[in-house]
Length: 462
Image (cartoon, rainbow, N blue to C red):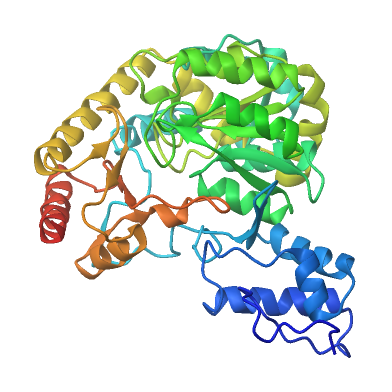
């Protein structure tokens, strides 16, 4: 029995532990996880101080610490220096956004998909490749030494997005998420911490959880990472680096200012922090801003791809990697990929160097602008953040409804949108907002039908 009496003492969590179950810290972690998943402990709940809980359970402090660490690595808890340990707001969210099959009754307005204008040009390019006499080479193993001209194509693509680099810095990956996972796997050990925005890309959350890398939310101001908060995290949170989406931030659709990019880069250099710069959406912009990597080229792993601007099935990403990180990330990519598809690598490269590349980009931009004009017309009475060339918007909800509640309500009416809760990190409080995809509906008519339903739902909340 504990020597102290806690019967009438206010504690947010009073677990019961069978001390015959060994190891005790795993049993305690298991109960903590179940109490979170079952709703006994709600997101945002502050847990008792570890020493207080150790006294209550008559256990060593180290046992409590190990149990909390297990749950932190699973993303269930978020510890903040000077504030304590909280149940993560994202603990119950489903980070896997796409279901195995698309429900036929739903209008897809959740997934960040481009329109399909590039499909036919890609098909024609592919047909041309397969008619060549040596077409068999597209179905063998790719070899790094054979891809020099493909790396030159990657340099052209990355330059189009606002970064000057050279072919010797280029690595290939099977999509942006694969490149992110490789960067984390090579630069972090289990238990390491990296800083992220308070709402961030779910693919990063799942990769970090798989690798037992902890995500530390860094305060944002005006929807961009606060440099002062980043520097504070460098000093107090023991982070090793940060992950950023400076352009068309997923999910908030915001842009990081050039001045903030410079300050973030300067802080990274000062504290020797790596930066993973996710440039998945960089081709959407008519006039790209300079990449964060351009201000700190030795600190930033810059990841570009075509899947968000051309075709989701074009699963190829290019990473511009500083010399100090190139070998470990290259090894991680090999271990994760075995090999990038030569067929996709060649198809992407030929598309980039083709005369129609700029025309394809402009065509997507024009389509996206038309779709955003529809969004602006139907949702004019509400705050729907995002640029006219963006493929998704960040819709702030009226009244008191949460994002999760609105997502469920919209789904009942045949619309798929994704709530802020799916993107939130740690003990950050999710906005009352949903991400609305502009280009996922197959036609303008389908988009308009979805917007009519969304407007009706929003009007009912006022």
